[in-house]
Image 1 (tube, rainbow, N blue to C red):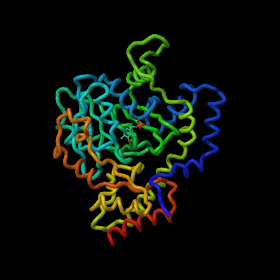
Image 2: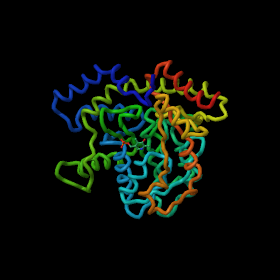
Image 3: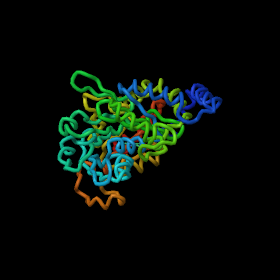
Image 4: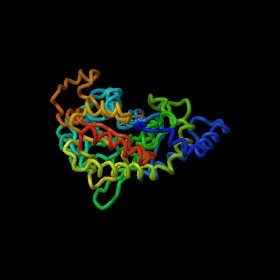
Amino acid sequence: MSVPLLDLRAQHARIRDEVVSEMMRVVDDQAFILGAPVERLEKAVAELSHSRFAIGCANGTDAILLSLRALDVKTGDEVVTTPFTFFATAGAIHNVGARPVFADIDPDTFNISPRAAASAVTGKTKAVMPVDLFGQIAAVDAVRAAIPDLPIIEDAAQSIGASRKIGDRTYMAGEAATIGTFSFFPSKNLGGYGDGGMIVTQDEEIANRLKRLRVHGGMKTYYHDEVGYNSRLDALQAAVLLAKLPHLESWSAARRKNAEYYNAAFAGSPDIKTPYIDPANVSIYNQYTLRVRRRDALQEHLKSKGIGNSIYYPLPLHLQPCFAYLGYSEGDFPESERAAKEVISLPVYPELEQSQLDEVIEAVRQFYGN
Ligand SMILES: *Cc1c(COP(=O)(O)O)cnc(C)c1O
């Protein structure tokens, strides 16, 4: 027996007819670029995210890049973000010519520490970019309180549909920031059958600029106000996502249920720390990530038992060779470095069978002998 980390074929098998019929509508219409399916998806994601505007784009990395451009972030500017995230967060900052400035994480949530973020701000800082790691919304409200004058881009690639209580209101991923960015990479909770991304905002001016930037910087064909990109959401991907979106809530609930099952099984183990979810948050568990003792040996053991797992992320961004020019060194962000050595993610996808959950638990327990 074996349990994969993610089984997209199991998901596809359950929704095949809905997805294929949405896709075939696009094929039969022969209208592949933007158009009705993209607009319908934008409307649906804006609703889900309690946002006035949603703008589809080519992928989650471009969603960040376009957002930085829409805020005029450019050469000489700095953007404060976390070093414990997927590479794209900081790569996009670099690619608009700005400098990624890192701030350490909160060791419980793995998300950027608002206090550390505030200390990293200089006169050159143009924006702050918290990341909703593993499906849990970052403390965007605390970041805003600590740094009230700067726009916030929330990298919500892993958190679409997650929520966070702020005051007496419930905010959705992307809603509380100046701009929120999503990815529809196949392994995200709402994944396409290829690449895709989306940006949400409450700000009409930013929304209009984003719509221009994704089509070479002009609203009117062949007239260009600024140099933009070719970064449109593919209509076929929008069709797939329209078929999948109605399932998102139940899929995320199934992930939470799986996470709770693991939590109960691992509770009390001296070797395992189960995920901490801020009581204000409802996570969508894009990943179920433990902190463990003897992580590398556990990973070997799970591999030998055929249990899918992965390390998100093994090397914090301030230590990546491509960012050597930033001048950071080991020890600069101790919580991110410690997390990189201790985390391991286990299968949490919604279609997991009871027997598979038990197999994962049994393999972990066997390793620790408890
Ligand atoms: C997946 C991801 C991205 C990038 O999304 P793509 O669609 O793959 O470009 C950005 N940030 C985070 C945190 C991600 O997990």
